[in-house]
Length: 401
Image 1 (cartoon, rainbow, N blue to C red):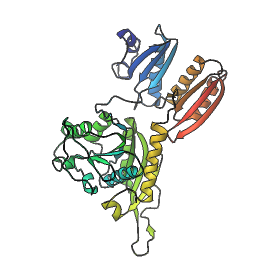
Image 2: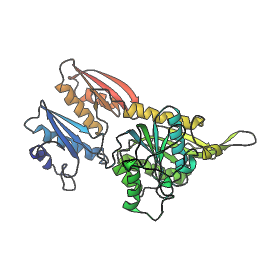
Image 3: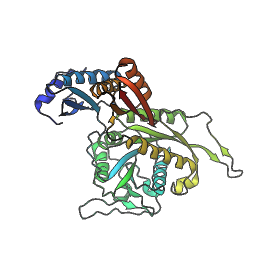
Image 4: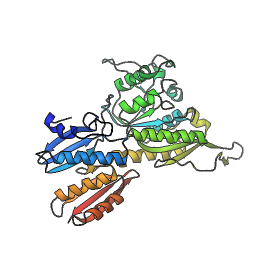
């Protein structure tokens, strides 16, 4: 956090429900003052809208009481502090499932190879310390992993330029007796110390479940989004719902889901046979179905990837382009603030703007936020323009009257 002890004192006087304050709790992360504008970065993931809104507005009030504050800007933390630094990687996407045996590794490898075939520089990390199967699906790589002059493990590289690291190619299969910090430490050392080349995307093949490794990875790895894998069985779908909730509670956006093995193509007539007719309903932007396919099991993805894998790759590319790289220069990114706090912040920005000036921000629901501002501050607002960036955000441009 920047600023003197005097700067954080107003926020220490705010009492949270558990008796702590936003500074000691890590909610107030950074304070900046510049030309009368006090900007407070807050980390409120997982608090729930009602509690988060109450805390944000208390923080806004405390900031307004600071002597140098003519205008207050509350910004949600978009780049949370993580212990693992991946300076050569632009974006990290997890492939996750609470259920084992649903084809998660197959989907992770197929997605990585297909993205690579589509021209992206892709890394693939096998975080399944208990059953590292990624090497078995990549026929054109062979260990062991070597280290460079700095002692860093050098990723293995496929013929098409995909880079991969796995515990399965560093001294053989990982012992399943590893648990807790020891198990996660083995993952952290290999991932964080890897000598990755410049990568557009790094795919993490997560272990099944919600155990220590998954929880620690969500806490310490800068994961931007997740693809969830399930079979159409009710138990698997229920577990996947919980997995989606877990990732969202940790600030990781859902990108898509894959319903795997919901059918097969008859070897006699070629007709597609579906095992379950009811669609799988998951709270994700896109759901893709993959049939059981022997070819996909032995050599997933790449230039000849099945149509469903290509569709999944397109969903991931859209997420990267429209969500992670979509904030125009000069626009505020308010995604993560409660909707009412987004509207309040933009009303304050309009009040501070010159007549006829424009305020731009990316929010989850630009229509709803724009209508709230028009209702609450009609005299300030001359016009609104909205542009959908993706299923998880949109650009809202407001013009002051």
